[in-house]
Length: 616
Image (cartoon, rainbow, N blue to C red; front, side, top):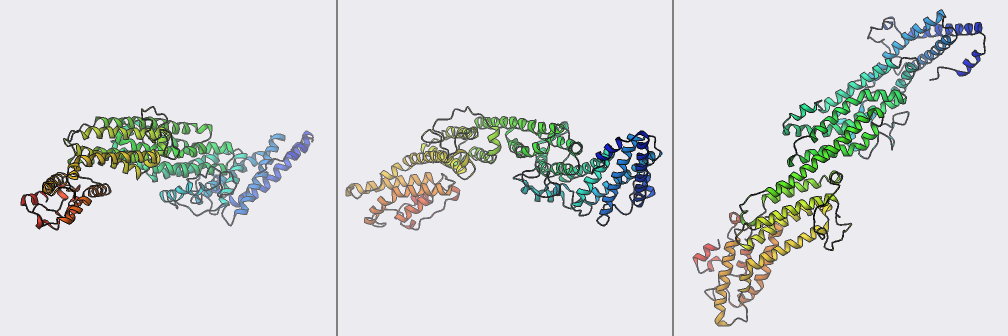
């Protein structure tokens, strides 16, 4: 809105003193007369009273009166020009005081119109609606590359709407409201009523932000209050905070920045935005700093990472929205939160590693199954791998003494196999610490075969966890392949120790007839002893169990089947098993004693009842 006409002022400056006074008197007189006649149509007498909070029944800026509203502002523009001209040329004019009084009455009415437009268009001007606009355009629209856009904005639109509620009072509103607000603000500010205008705006919009945060469940707690909370309670508040922070940054604060930029000039927009959002934003990050100060224990690492990851993803948006020097405190607090949370996560990682090393249980796991420490540690590390983006920024340096070929058999980094990033090295080191602990626990078994079965079970569990989770991306396929080879090596040693005597005792076709009976007796005894022992051992993973059973069967069945064809059950009193019996007993292994069931269909051919009992 142009209130001063430089050409007119230049022309009037060439006039003499009396001419100037006459010109200004005529100008102010005509302007006051025209303004008074028009303003009185809309400004009712009770509105002249500055203490009155009521509004006239009909709004100047309603849909049906909007053209009149524009004319109202044009009349005030001319009146303001006349007042400025008269102040410069004839400050003692009697009409000047009348014009200034009329301007005060008009400004008081505009205050109410400004408030009315804000209130009646509250839904249209809600944060979730405004955050979808372009901060650079003059009308509400979507565009890319602005403060209102980011790759993740779409994810939060529906979340924000559902969290905040689409209808928070007021009418639907439309894009004309922005034009009305901007014109009213320009008129009031250029007329010297900036303080009155922004006071209304700040109070109204700040209340919306405070109510929205409260609706989301955010509590304004001091650092001292939060440090007194039990961890279980704080953990619940962290879940709420993560949701609040995303909506607050992407929707609430972003929307306020955009709306301020649409309505006001840059300096005024900054003042409004700071007043409306600064304290709420600082309160938001007091929470994250307090989380970072919590006691460093391993079980707290995942909620802490949730807070860290949330801020990390929001940092670009925070820097964009709070770009003013006057909001630098928000940027500093967000970055300080990341730094402190990073230190906390590193301390918790160290504490977690220490807890693995200090685990001191001395009882062997029954049947050589998967140790509870293996399950706990691997589940923990799998969850850590889900935070790979955050951990990549937290774990920046690594001087861990990992073997050169730990990630690839060639000892050279394979770009497609996970690499040796500090994060990969740290997680690999934790697994190595675990495997060293498992190796130590394997010595608790008196039977070497059972020790190797225990090692195979636990390493297979580790490898399966890596292969079926995000750890495979972090550690790489070569890591998986290397450790699968180690599982096979453990199984080979297990089979050699557990089934070697049985395999070597299988009767051969070339065995002399006089030695055949003794050879078969040795086989029966060796198999019965092996079965009796191994049916109490366990292989929890069904795929690994099937692999071991198939391997044992491949080594036993061909030789025994060839012998049985010549000497079936019943042809000799010491031939006790059909090939089907043998296969069924092998299939019955590694389930554990409590789950083992008799599966042979030919037990009636067994000679010794005592042997039959052994095989149950």
